[in-house]
Length: 116
Length: 113
Image (cartoon, rainbow over all chains, first blue to last red; front, side, top):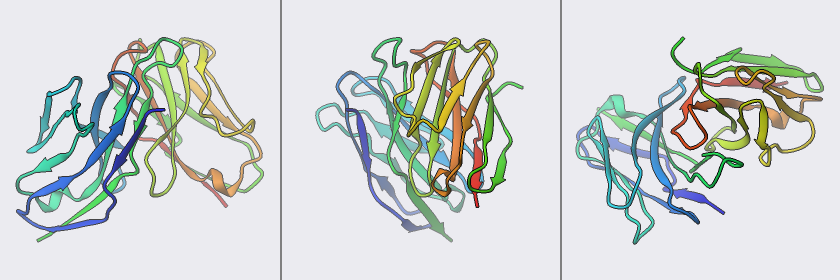
């Protein structure tokens, strides 16, 4: 079945450091890939997405490229800020018909703490 | 409102009690999903509605869990004889149709004492 594996945390970085959070996936079809962010005490927010191979999703300085050959969708940011401290979830959705819809499969989440 | 609304935002109850969690999807969205996010985990799929019918309920953990969507809009997730292991954040998401991107609500945090 479909699944997502992401780098375990927690991750602690200094402000302005480079961030990479690894994510790999398994899917039988042609999934769309997502990164969601969950700030303390808040709900899930879509950070970025990519719907086909070689697409790059980007938002708020974060980027991820859909790599079909390595089944990966690693999240990167060149210079993190304290306000980026949150839990990051990699996810895929794979529409396989009206009987199953477009359900999401999430990774376990990676907690990021950025210290000044 | 413009987004998916879930009520209550927090629910605390005793083991063995019955609870209902409500989801108001975005107006006009035909597809609705429930997920459960346990502490330290990513959300896990519970059930998917297309209109009024539960098209896929394969994620419901056992028969204590049930969900309805009688008019194809608001959905209620019902949990009978709650157990401490049911404590989690229950998320609802909706999409215009079953093949479109989902919009998530803020969730209901359920705590079973």
